[in-house]
Length: 213
Picture 1 (cartoon, rainbow, N blue to C red):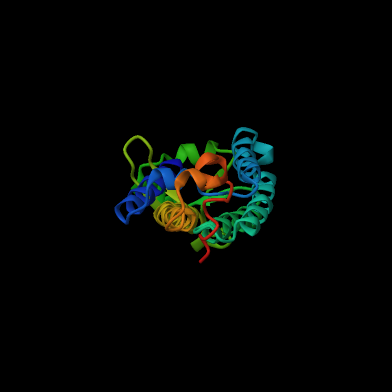
Picture 2 (picture 1 turned 135 degrees about the horizontal axis):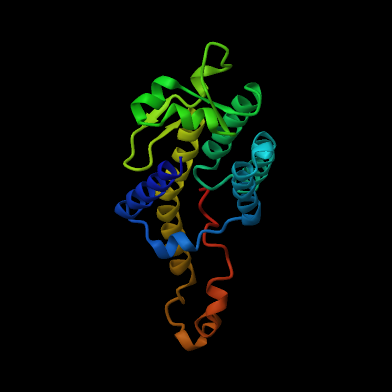
């Protein structure tokens, strides 16, 4: 899944740059409570490292992402992000704390079944699998990084890609709007404009103040 997320981010940002966004604008996007997002990712990593925490980690991560999405509802892609994580959590809880993986998908992606049987986070899918369409059923035969992902994973990747494609464009427009607004009126010398002497005033307003518009 990691490769999918990286590709989604790189692809999204590339689209955003093609559409006129800039990296400078992207890094200026204001994100509320970023530590909540970091905590959610750290929790998921801990869940992979400590087998007994896998299901609990997804529950905690889901709650954290919901809080993060609520605080950043104007940011593109956050809705897809939390829906994808929530869907994965429901599937994992419904299947005893592990994510079922389609044997058909594993074969086509090149994932050894022995790895699934030995995994503490995954289990081979079967007749008793609950919510089978939402389990790991989509094969991704990446070189040296074969994987089988779920619809939830695709939604998470889509949210990240959407953010990369839209956020830099909206942020650039917001920056340009601020520059036009902050330009001294005709007849006023730059030396008479307080903002010209204090660059901090020009950046006091979050860059994404108009992202939701």
